[in-house]
Image (tube, rainbow, N blue to C red):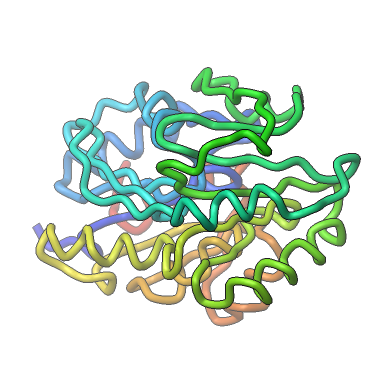
Length: 271
């Protein structure tokens, strides 16, 4: 069978997931039919692995690859671990000490399978209602630095993150990778961790390259991936900075309308 791409790669929030942060029935049917054609399916997200595994449990897939925490971890859907890349523990403990305005910003970390946060933020649970994955409130002054995939700061406005980002960049330079999953969420990973780099490693194991992939995304944490694959599509609802960074990439529909699934059906001839 002559396929236009060997694999599709999709971000989740704002991309593959609908307005309720769930995978819609139309999308589930599309992915199942796509897999039946022999196309590899990658989900590449800033979410943690346990969260993603619960989200995709409704899709009947024999095989899928999960790139989580912006590339800090990669697994097969079956559970087989492909790679991890943690922030050094000493740096993690220093990141936990960076001052911020607690009325405007909350501190989070993904460490192993756990999500930690410095304060209860009930509205965050709406993003994870379908998976049931949730955080533990901790005192980061006493928190360990083990198996840290990412540290992230969620703010009321993008301006609340400016000083934090500047301090991290000035202090650590190229020791860390910084990105934004949304304009209000600054994410910090180990050096060179991004979706594109991890995806490149995994597709090599499958016998092809990024040029054989069709990808979809909506945030600045997708910019490397969308610029390096064979074709990278941007959601209509994407961060304006992503559209500015990749002005020649095709902009498709809104995630609320399950536009990734519609686009896949058109490209692969799925009825």
